[in-house]
Length: 390
Image (cartoon, rainbow, N blue to C red; front, side, top):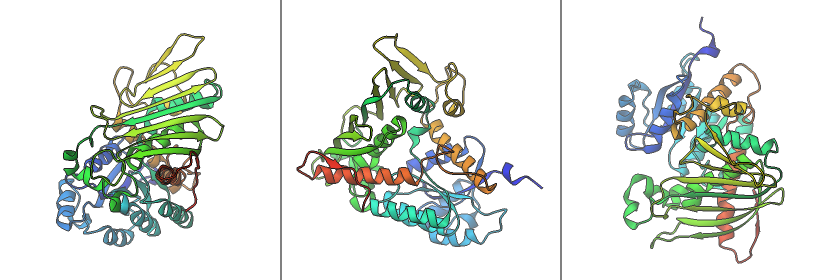
């Protein structure tokens, strides 16, 4: 008999069919380490498209489902040696909560694309589902998966920077700079409040920036002052914004996010300034981390060069000089979630923090950031408390 701890983890997918960008990214990430098999899916709201998408991925026709409700019911009845371990949710935001809730109630683990839900109320409700069902829940805050992001976190947590004094995080894109850019499938649902929620820019990329700032610094946002904009005529949701931040150690910061910054690609950059040193990391040059001070030569830390912290070392896949990027970072989230599931199956400790997997805590923090950024932008007062209440 094959040891169950050595078998591949079985994955199902909701969304991500033909023409969907992020579904293919999830599959590449899931397959990169050879630890996961995609065995079923409901890949589209169109039954015909779901079937054709599944067949093109070499999935058996009887496991290409008409909808996720049918899939959960039938997959839950399969014998243990065939049953899915977890489902990846790669749909627009408005479907994240009902799918995740139903999947966990049927006994499956969930790895969801971000943001976690349509609104904060759903995220808080989902937390109760996670607690009640005891299933694992992960969230693909992809940028946490980069080796040098983990090294940056290590430098902060071990006191290399001293007390954190200022945090600057920026996420700039230009792909929605024109009215003509709204015709794509990826753009249309993000600009539709019924599918994306109360925010486009902050909900899509600002939430990544906020998560990265909290993940690396180890601090939490306690107050914010927000100014969100809808720059392109006719848009009801924000496509640009700036948020001043206060953190729980008393330091301040600024978060800038824009999808109308002409010429920008995917410019996520984090700078953290401490009393002794500072760090500077950019997603477009992810294999480099700058460490600077006023008293020592500036140091360029490179992925794969020298001994990094254990979390960074574990996330490195290739030797120095072989660039690793977005797909590998995404795969690291999947890799850690796979390890978490294996520990769960073995009855071992399997909390998200131990396996460095963003979970329901980060889900609630993310939805609270979006909610607070939007509401604060509509207020006349300067500072608003960061609240996680409904």
